[in-house]
Image (cartoon, rainbow, N blue to C red; front, side, top):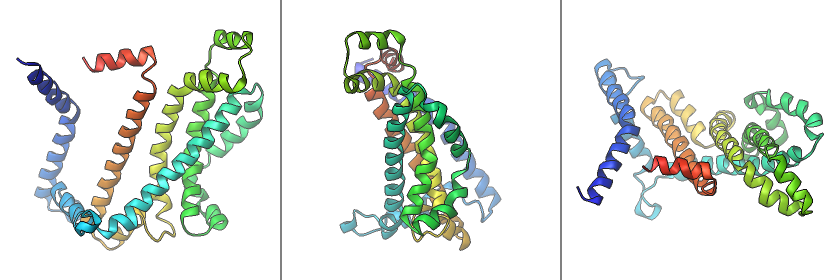
Length: 276
């Protein structure tokens, strides 16, 4: 067997190992829903056809994307990624400061425990009063929910720096900016990335929730609008799109994480095992 054939066989085997259960569930879903004929649960083939019709039947000048994509999907993606970026920057900065401080978490710990125990959707009326109906309220809701995993994982990661590294840096009188940028943050990166992935999932959920209340566009708005219109194929198409977006964004972040952490010996060993 040639090298190219061996690689192709390995690719097909890996693809089936990952997606065989998913394909089986979709085929079972198609069979059961066609036999049931229930209007509330359309078959996957009808959901895919509906999604293709409402998203990919635009003119060539718009890259064959419809106005629904530009008016609803792209604004929602902008909100979730923008709010996640704000939560990431603030969470890493605050987490690094609190993690490096000996007494910071003694004061901030109770406050953060109290704040993160509040479900972010319950604060939507407060954000409505503060920012009014629109993007400001939606971004504030997402940032509030996505901030805590990044902050707490950063604190934990920063505190995991070994005593030997700290004493070495102290003996060489390493400036704080080099110590934090070249030792502390690289050592904390695995836990920071774990917090970023969790925050991304929370941000996607809160994006939909925030668009269910007083929104004028967005995926959540279209989802609840189609449900109220009893247009169930369209409603299911939006639900499937959310699953695709969640999987795609997480896979993209995982790829970035692997590249950023490939210098770690344990990570290199895992990649070598995964690659055969």
